[in-house]
Length: 325
Ligand SMILES: [Zn+2]
Ligand SMILES: [Zn+2]
Image 1 (cartoon, protein in one colour):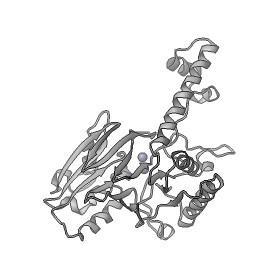
Image 2: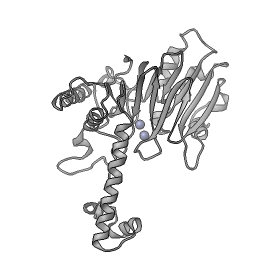
Image 3: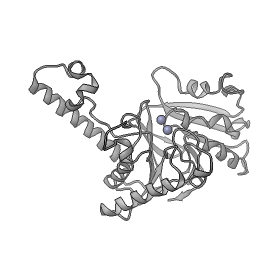
Image 4: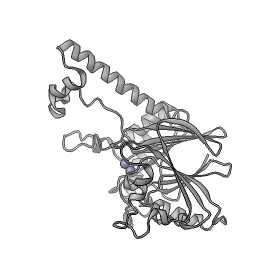
């Protein structure tokens, strides 16, 4: 499988001299499983450059690509209106993305192309464009086994596991570890006993503690499943938005719990637990300058070595990087 990074940044494009080496485009990864298939993971601003590259591949009007969306936050779809191959008749694209409770996937992608936001509507793109809504499931596309799994983000978000010819690529970004938000020590913040009673049916002290332990167990199990999803992957593309100090400042202050992103330590722990071969740190924080991304990478390399797994190749994804597995 060949993996190419066209956009590695989270949240918003960040052009400029401070990010020129790592790149400022938002999430877009090209995956060529190896049997002639073309998969695109997310349609952040990086997909614009991918589109221009595709125009030079000698198959204009004959492209048949599948686009997998982790979710529909802007940084994962806002490059789509600038994707030139979608304007070429004869090309075919099929979006796969999470089902939403109140809006169709097609309407969400089309919504950013309403006249208030963009001059050309989705229906005026000349390529054939289809949409498939996904829940957690395993299915096959173009001979590739794909498993979609829910992650922990403020909107329904999917991680994907692509398996082809004995190779495995897994995406897990825009996610953070699950926490038991109704633990006793957090009661003041979470609404106290009222919330507890609503969720767990109230009751006396002993019973309440039992429910709390049960909730802890459920949370542990959900986190274990997130790690297992990457089991033995050749490449894991993982959310590396925060350092652990940014996520949970030791001296107090604003934490980032609930914002839907992981830490470098989570990336390392997942990689070791799941026994992955390579980890691409992905979805870099917008304010992270090139040298700060280098520091993140060094921190992770040191951490895997300290934990006895220096063989795990962990690196910060850069725009333009290619990984052949
Ligand atoms: Zn994002
Ligand atoms: Zn998001």
